[in-house]
Image (cartoon, rainbow, N blue to C red):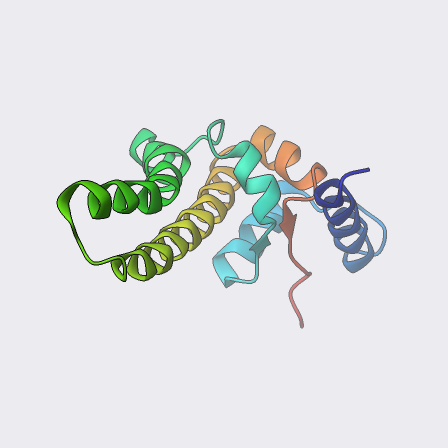
Length: 140
């Protein structure tokens, strides 16, 4: 079992344990989402971001543009340093910029997962049963 799947399975077990062995309903999720107590699994968010029922611009930005930009920053700077004679220290800026873009993309994918789960009960079932969402019952 890949490590991402093992982490997702552990998150699903933890979700059920937090809800006394039962799978929380969509209404439970929406109340936890309004309270801001939902966390998302980044590996599951990466797999589901393109199918989430969220606005198309969010899916394009966080699912396509930012990941590709993060991937292409360093090779582009290597090419620019070689062809344009830029200082090779710009590669350090490129690596840092790539890491920042990648982290922004991952956080945006998690937000897409949470927003999609709040909009569609079917998508909530898919995301939560895949171990993508973790939240606890509200405290009294």
